[in-house]
Image (cartoon, rainbow over all chains, first blue to last red; front, side, top):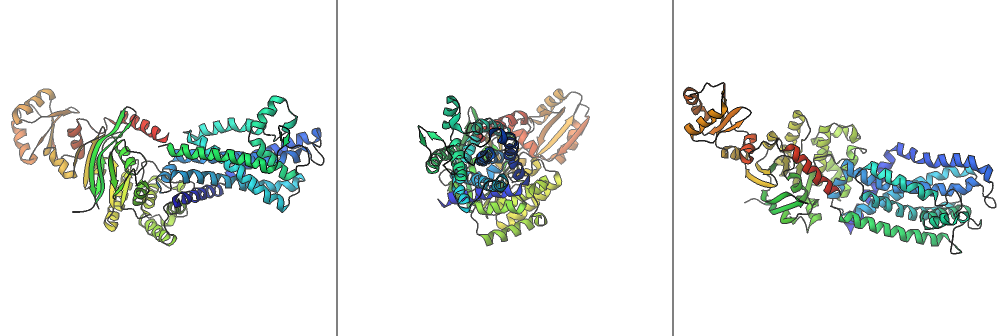
Amino acid sequence: MTEIWRGVWVVAYREILRFVADRARLLSSFAMPLLFLVVFGAGFTRTIGALAQGVNYIQFMYPGIIAMTVLTSSLFAGMSVVADREFGFLKEILVAPIGRTGIVLGKAAGGSLVALVQALVMLVLAPILGVKLTPTLVLSLIPVVIILSLGLSSLGVLIASFMQSQQGFQLFVQILIFPLIFLAGVFFPVNNVPAWMEVISKVNPLTYGVDAIRQIFLGSAHGLGVTVFGHTMTVASEMALVGILGAFLLLGAVIVFNRQE
Amino acid sequence: MRVKVIEVENLSRRFGKIEAVKEVSFAIEEGEIFGFLGPNGAGKTTTINMLCTLLRPGGGSARVNGFDVVRQRSDVRRSIGLVFQQSTLDEQLSAEQNLRFHGYAYGIPAAQREQRMNDLLTMVELNDRRKHKVRTFSGGMKRRLEIARGLLHLPRVLFLDEPTLGLDPQTRKHIWDYLHDLRQRENLTIFLTTHYMDEAENCGRIAVIDHGRIVAMDSPDGLKNAVGGDLVTFSTADTQAAAELVRQRYHVEPQIQDGQVRFHVTSGETFLPDFVREFPQRLLSVGLRRPTLEDVFLSLTGHEIRDSELDAKDLMRQGMQRWQR
C-alpha cells in the first residue's frame, strides 16, 4: 500500500514539474479556449442577445470554455504516458518499486492537478467578460473541476494504454474531443435543439460537467440547465454521475495497465 | 565460497512462435563482472528483462539477491540498478531532477539521497552540469548519468544492457573506467549484455549466447584457449586445394573465410617457420595471431556475430513491440 501512495505522488509530482518546465505548453493550452471566446463571443453576442435574464452569450459560453480547457488538458494526461513510452522513461517508472496501480493513479492525479491549474488561470478572464468572481464561486469550482478532470484524465490514460505513438494518440483524441465539446452544451443550450442532438448531448457525460460549472457561475435560476426526463439536474447529482463514470474509467485504466507486459 | 547474487535455472521465454530464450541456466557470484555476449536478437535483452521483473518468465526460475523474480518483484527491484539499451532519462528535466525522481521512487531518505547524488555526480564528472536539462547532454554524458542514477539506491547488482551502444571508443573506455572503479569501491556485481567483442574483454566471465541458448561459458582467456590455441591464416591462389592440404598434413579442420584459409595450432610461433618452409603451394600471405572473442564466437556458432544481425534485429523489434503492447 505504501508503494502505491509513493507511486501516486512521485508520478504526479513529475507531471507538475514537467508542466511548469514547459512554458510553451502552458501558453498554447490557452490558445484554443481564448480563440473560441474571442471569435465566437465577438461574433455571436450581438446577434443572439441575452439568453436569459442578465446572461449574454459570452457569459453563457465562458463556463463551457473552462470545462473545455479541463477536457483537453486532462485527456492529454494520456499523452504523457505515450510520450514516456516512446522516449523510454516509462521503463524507469515501470522497474521502480512502485507498482502499476500507483503509476496510473499518479498519472491521473497529475493530469487532474494540471487541469485544475489551467482552469483557475482561465478565471483571470472573468472580470474582462463581466463575470463576477466570489470566493464561494472559486471554492465550489475547485472540487467540481477535480472530479471532472480525474475522470477525463483516467480516460486519457486508458486510451494511451492502447496507443503506441504520440501521433496516433493525438489523432484519436482530436477525433474524440470535437464531438464531445460540440455536443456538450458549451456553445448552445442543449434543451432547445433537435431531438437527435438532444439525445446525444444528454448521453455525453461532458454535458453534465459543463452544466455544473455553468450553474456555479450563473446560478440555477436562469432556466438554461440540463433536464433529464423533466428533472432539472443539480450540481450535486451531476457530480455524482460524472464521479461514478470517472471511477469506472480509472478502474479500467488500472486494470488495463496492470495486465500489460 | 562467495555469495551467489544471481541464480538462474532453465529460464525460458517465447514470443508467439519465436523461442527467444531457451532453458538458460547460470549463476553469478558477488563482485563478478558477468557478460552475455551474442548478436542482437540472441535473447540477451529478454533475459535481462526477466531478471529485472519487466517480463514474466515463460518457464524456469530466477533469483536475484535471493529474491524470486516472479513472487518478490519489489524486493528484486529495490536491490538492483538498471541501465537500458535506450535512454530512459526525462530529457525535459535536469540531471538533478532525474536523480531526485529516482530517489523519491525508491523511497531513499532525503539526506542520504542528496549525499549519494553528490558522490555519484562527482564520480561521473557531471557535478557542474547538474542543473542543466538532460536534452543538452551528449550521448556519453547521458549514459554516465544513467549509470549514476542506476546506482543511487545502493543496489547490489547493476544490470547494463548494451552499456556503450552507439558511443565512440574514447567514451566507451571512459565508461568502463568508471565501472571497474565502482566494482572495486562498492563490491558491486555487474551483469551486462553486449555484442561488442572488445567490451566483452572487460568481463570476468562470459556466457556466449546464440539463438536463445548459452553455447559456452568461461573467462575470456578460457574461451580463447578452448578454441584450440593460436590462429593461423594464409592465402594462396587456390584456397580449396590449400585447405585440403592442411587437413591431410596437420590433421586439423580448416575453415575458409574471406578468401583465407584459417586453422588453429597449439604453439603458433614454433609452428609457423616450418609451415612456411614446407607448404607445397606458393603462399600469398601468412598471418598468426592469438584468437579473439570473434574467433571464439565463430568457432562456437559457425557464424560471425555480424552475420546474424539483420534478421535478428527484426526479431528483436517484434519482441519489443510485444512488450510495449
